[in-house]
Length: 293
Image 1 (tube, one colour):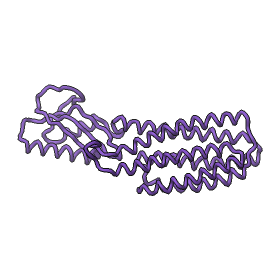
Image 2 (cartoon, helix red, strand yellow):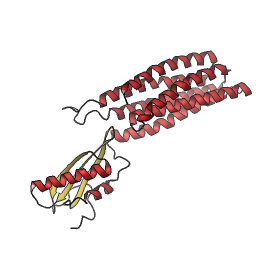
Image 3 (cartoon, one colour):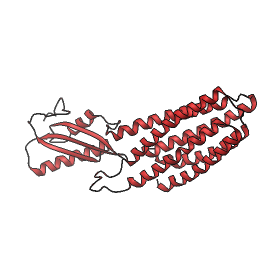
Image 4 (cartoon, helix red, strand yellow):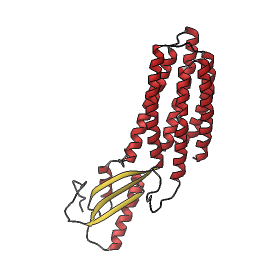
């Protein structure tokens, strides 16, 4: 996906915020004002994500030796923290309005939310192709939540028009805040896991280590570390014990390990320290049953 998509999404979101602020003030709707603030939080989020996409395209250098792939995860983490704080604020404002409900103009709520739904729906469809990228996923989830909140505001406005129950407006505002909080916590945990160099959740250390024992010449594997570099790239480092042999045979074993890890686990960055079989284990993960030859 091109960064220009995020730039257009940011411009559309700014226009939407202006429309919802006017609609909320003229219609006396806390739900619309809360949704305007919610959408306003998308602007720095989109800006950070746009910058992250540009950074992620930069090659590695002598300072950032792994490149800038984690810029997206850092952006997602920052966005999620901001959204959690915003959700708390939205919840508090809604509770205050629930204590003292105000009359709202449901027509302003309906037409402003229809326009907002068109904008948020369009942004969601534009970003859906990048849903596997954690950075873009944070924006996608956020805009999908925006679209759902627009639908809820439309339904709520219709109910207010038929029943006169003006407390529906702050209830919707509280629901929007809870939706933001729920979606943000998941992104916060996932991005923090990558930034802390956690093991990719789809991989298991023992499963990967046992697979490496299938390579001819590998007697034992220990001190295995697996982490994400960001942008879908996975790295692995380990120690492998092999029989005493010539260097050319060691190169064959290394090539076999790298090929297996790439094919079976999509691990593209592999570092293996070879050790002569029979040496005592020093630390880390050791296979309980070395391969029998």
